[in-house]
Image 1 (cartoon, rainbow, N blue to C red):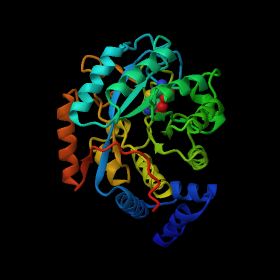
Image 2 (cartoon, protein in one colour; image 1 turned 180 degrees about the vertical axis):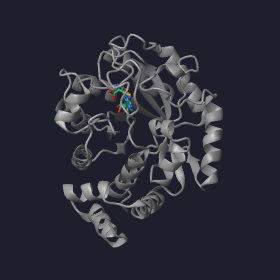
Image 3 (cartoon, rainbow, N blue to C red; image 1 turned 30 degrees about the vertical axis):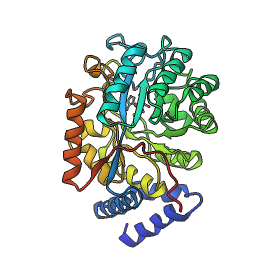
Image 4 (cartoon, rainbow, N blue to C red; image 1 turned 60 degrees about the horizontal axis):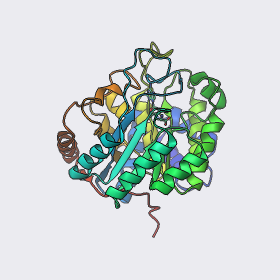
Amino acid sequence: MSKNDADDLVNVLETAPVVPADVWRMLLTDLDDAGKEHITLLARKVAQSHFGTGVYVRALIEISSYCRNNCYYCGLRCSNSAASRYRLGKDDILESCRVGASLGFNTFVLQGGEDPVQSDEWLADVVSAIRAEHPGRAITLSVGERGTAAYEAFRRAGADRYLLRHETADEEHYSHLHPSSMSASGRQQCLYELKRLGYQVGSGMMVGSPGQQTAHLVEDLMFLDRLQPQMIGIGPFIPATGTPFAAEPHGSAGMTLLLISLLRIRFPSALIPATTALATLLPDGTIRGILAGANVVMPNITPAVYRNRYTIYDNKKSTGSESAEQLTLLSNDLAKIGYRIDFSRGDYETGEE
Ligand code: SAH
């Protein structure tokens, strides 16, 4: 595809109320290296025009590695008897938030498996306690499919945002990745509920999950267009020991970067992280993600004793270093490309005057 043709397609992303499937497909499959580089630069410009050279940071606390689900790709699936299980108590979580706050974080992300012991009531209580101690900071939850009553209770308790990737929008591909007790439509319903309750919502998909075709990614992009999430997290699939997909190849980092750029062009004000999975595949994955149009990084501040046990996939990048040191390293890496950490809350803003 020539640069002019690529520009015509980009123009569709920038202006069309609905992007036709064919346009997405051509952007995913027909760009040569020069075309991809062109898209990367355009996406970087879009990100800079909305966020300058600031990168928001979110303090990630992985609250439990127990999960009642049995997703075929995830190392925390309930039937993986080799997984190392832990759960944080309320005091651990509150202490982690204090550490995060003292480092300057203004968003806490509580992520975990669907741990039945960390009940909806318990979690709502934890959120209330965090809200009381940190009235001005944002609380993001990422604890799976919990049902409307729970989402309402978390919201009342003070949660502002919720991350729930749709994983794949294609029902059949979804059933290739999950047991029959789970469905793409059920998950999507949760996302619409979360939006209705006033959460800033994050969704997204794995790139290169086993059996994924280009047509599935096109469906993902079209689903995101309908959902209009405030945050979009995507990362390459990475095999996990103890899962049915342990011997499958990992997803493509290059395709992940291209998708970040296309999403940035389509969703100029979205909060898009450079994910840990990308950084696991590429030593400079975080920086490459930022240069492709991402504008968020989520340093892991889970207490060090538990840090390596949230093994959703193998070799998950973990610096093992203290949280403060991670921030210094990130800050230095960003400075090399002319970027800096932005410690503000980083709420979603439309960017419209
Ligand atoms: N239980 C929560 C959090 C899951 S972990 C939830 O259901 O939302 C966060 C994300 O990690 C998942 O949404 C999934 O997209 C990703 N993930 C899980 N296993 C993975 C793997 N093997 N490779 C890459 N990403 C994976």
